[in-house]
Length: 321
Ligand code: UFG
Image (tube, rainbow, N blue to C red; front, side, top):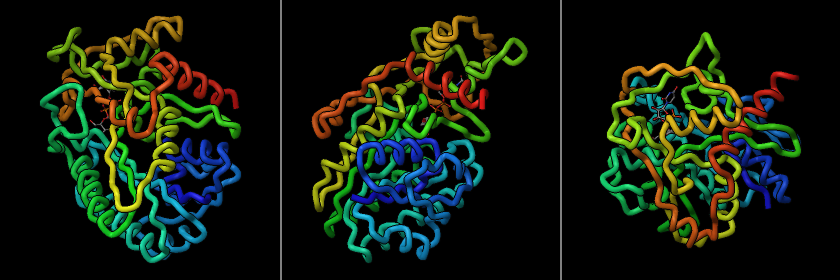
């Protein structure tokens, strides 16, 4: 089966491409390289440089495919507040274009990259898929709008699963080499704390949150576990059905706990600086992952130390090049 991976030059999309190829699928990547990297598209995938905003590029990329993994999107919460129109255009209109072209090409299998940001500030922890959806950013609102579009499309036969990611982390050592996060700017905790040095400490955004140690709690999931769930999702699609499934580890780690895991992995102290809270951060986000267990027979394998050590190893491998 050939799978179209939109956004296959990005962090998560590149790991998906590699793991699909390793498991015997054929892959076409469509990416405009606006935030992704051409060299992250692994050998063996057919690459088409183009955007989901172009119906022509989509139609061309879909040729010969039987299923789609849709990652291409704008994905920075802060930027979405400054540029909501851009986020609606790329994320919502881009997906409308994709669904239209899939329908014209009679391709009815879709796995969509959704997010915990669709829930907004949670009322109950852990967060299940039946929780209220009230996004606190345009980014979350666009992903929720796409989930709703997909639900509508499933009424005419589309087989779809939206996977709502919590905090994706780690790197993947594929047979093509390491694939890791390379965002610019980098806002995520783990890559940032690994870059901290004596002169440049990691900033902890607030130690006065209502949590056990005062720092925010998140649910981190290794990117390889995440893609494993996507491939299981592909195998569990049902015509006319749109399932929404959380992907996390089911356990919460505070920022202080992540730093302490990194200290252990690196074998050296990490300099920290406590600063004020980052606006828009909820105190605690932890996924209820029981549905992923039931529907996909999936369970995450890798812990926070593995996420840190893989990120560290991949950065060192990059440095040695
Ligand atoms: N943090 C720091 N210092 C840093 C970076 C992060 O203290 O330098 C803290 C944040 O305040 C937060 C935690 O570390 O408590 C994790 O922050 P990240 O930026 O790594 O991730 P987020 O939780 O902000 O973002 C994730 C996803 C987004 C998604 C969002 C939904 O990466 O795609 O959750 O809330 F939209």
